[in-house]
Length: 360
Image 1 (cartoon, helix red, strand yellow):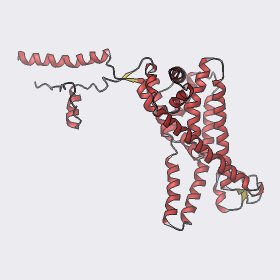
Image 2 (spheres, helix red, strand yellow):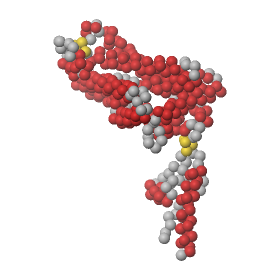
Image 3 (cartoon, one colour):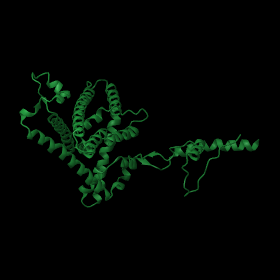
Image 4 (tube, helix red, strand yellow):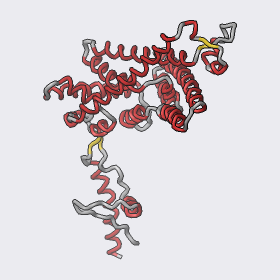
């Protein structure tokens, strides 16, 4: 009986990358993850490797995005509300009637006046801004508490949740939370946690979650309809191809940015590392993941003590932290004992087969 030969590559050899060779290699020994190992200490021993001068550039970029987004959210919307008298916040234009908010307003108004689209969008985005500022204030409050646990949990939530949210949020981006790929897994997870608690919190987390998703869907849909009408009007009334193209491209860019890919990938990484085989973050596993992140922020602060301008180094590292850093910290290429044992188990049948063949 012919035996499959396992390729052995001397150190320093460039490993083949063509499909047939790699297929044959791993068909003989299907050990795909022999070098995959999660750092048992959470990667804290490698925190010093995150400190690099290029962090200041990326942190400055993050701060710039934050300031730019807040500028474009606050000033244009306030200008819309202040430039129009309150009596002109409503209009009788026919296209305004298709907004959901105007369908609600129409139930309480006898005439045909409806909220102007630009006024409605300004109110939605400024209201959403106040909501996110409230969450930021909550994290700041936690960061000022006396216990280390709450303090670093608040700091981690501030730099890795609240500030990135403020850097990229918009009314239409609220649709991220009701995208099926995001909504369904989160709904199932919070429903499972509600069942596991046996009603100890009276289902309030689940009710809060559902209420927020309804609000996100309402705000996102309204913003989409308003911006779609604006883009369509701009394209139809454009006097040149360039003007029509730019208005359409700007709207397309906003639509493509609805799903926050970084947030989605970050959640998937946490589920992969902390949730286990069932891909479900229980209350304890969720708390463990938050504890890991809070302790990582504390480790970064302690490591920054080795540098001048400690606070600047700390902010540079945490504000430029990405999923690549998460992978760098948590993964290790060190071989593990059971990998070596698996190698031996795969090698043993080959040796027996060779001996049997020799005896025959």
